[in-house]
Length: 91
Image (cartoon, rainbow, N blue to C red; front, side, top):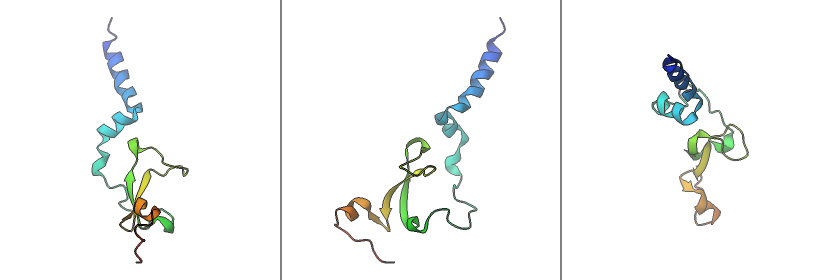
């Protein structure tokens, strides 16, 4: 008897180990991920790339720590570049 409080608080603490729960309750979508950085933290090859965040914030591809999927380069989709329907505009 009397174990209800302990079970409830333990469950509450353990919920934070679940990434989906943490993501939905921290309200990080309102915070700016790149605010305060004076210089870009990527290679110069990737500075003109439009990115999308991957599912559940996990890593993408062969580079550990990269959490973005490349969608566009300089406003042109990668599929159009690959099929040579469009060229990358010169800046």
